[in-house]
Image (cartoon, rainbow, N blue to C red; front, top):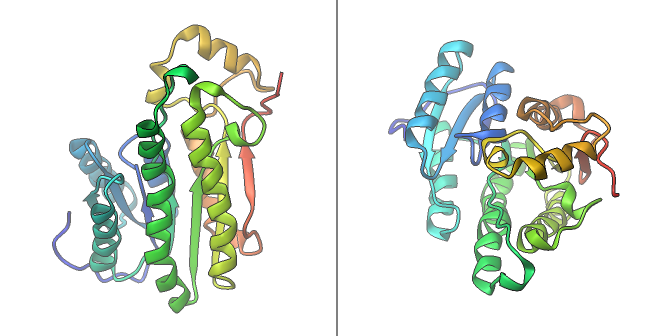
Length: 254
């Protein structure tokens, strides 16, 4: 965590879960567009610091690295507070971080549901509740929530708690858009299968089956999702608000 305040005229993007996967790709995409970037992590300190250093060197932007366990309310509040402390503002919030528990439906527990809700829904709500009013005061803000096609075109009993939390995030997108109009745009991106490290650990048979159900015959690249997120956070998307947008390569319900 940077312990001094950065004076900046650039737009500032806070991306949760940006030490790997889609969040990492989003950090690079925003930096390439001239945004100052806050890299958030919970365990991967070295990875987060390497990303921060690299994008600073490549793109000449300012960065900060902040640790926070999004399952803990006090740390979520501290994340938002430190982001404002370092840069003085947050123009773009990407609620990217999430956890997914895959298991037989019969083995699922209330504890698993609560854990999923804490990270995937409660944390985005709380960060939005803290930062969006500041955006509204500045008459500028973009929030992009990351959900999943699992709550739009596919349904899996094995990921019931993940899907339930992401369905709640879609609802939060709508209510937040209404609450913070007209200056804060809130949208939601629903990726299909993405080639992240987490997914690469799944059985190859499952991956082959899932990719066979897309028109593209492959998973999305994290960078492809990042470009959509960055577009929704740009001024070119000013009239897109309260929307839920799929990026799934033509994934079919079969």
